[in-house]
Amino acid sequence: MIKTMTGEWTRRRFFAGLAAAGVAGCFVQRGEPALAQTVLSSDEAIRELIAGNERFVAGNITSFPEDLKILKAKTVDKQEPFVSVLACADSRIPVELIFDQTIGHIFVSRVAGNMVTPEIVASLEYGVAVLGTKAILVMGHTGCGAIAAAIQAKEVPGQISVLYQHLMPAIAGAHGDISLAVKMNAAYQAKLLSESSTVIAKAIKDGGVKVVSGSYDLGTGRVTLSA
Image (cartoon, rainbow, N blue to C red; front, side, top):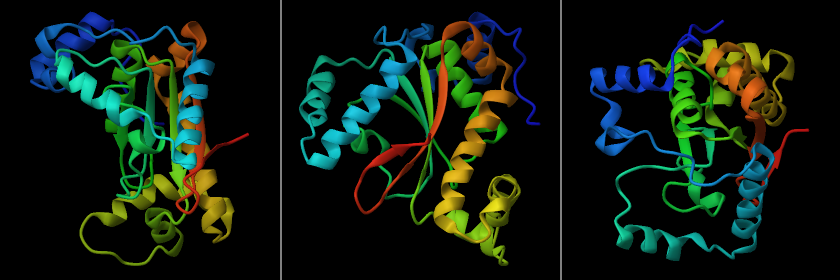
């Protein structure tokens, strides 16, 4: 079980703690908690992601002109995402682009193997508790190097092997099938996130927040949610 922030933390105490640590400024300007930019439900937030991915697959991206409008309007004082995404650090997974979303729409956390660690939990808790995101997608992808490395469990340089301890429990039943392991890992990490975080677990119970998993296909560009 991952040790995370206690459920007793209110938004004010959470934000004050970040400010004291000197990191609040990287999330919200002027010390003001941002509100969710829409009133989407968790189901609507997920549907918007998938609709954006369909536009991406079809080559009908609409977000770039909106990016310019936002920059011109100088909306730099706060962030107002409607959804959070935990994705792999792989450079071929530009999260906002594949969901055809503009600046400030997705609260993105990325780490090799899209795995849940205390730092990732803290980030996603912030998205839910302070920014008001209504859904979290844990997204794996085809050809994931972190998953392949964990399956092979070969000696690697530096700190890379630290990834294994977070991935091995998720992929133990894949029996070397990387494609299956990618899906199993995303589902496992989503479940772990839902259960290990008191903040997110409470938001699921009381606020209708949803945590789902899925996989991005590097070849087709399509995101498929797990059943």
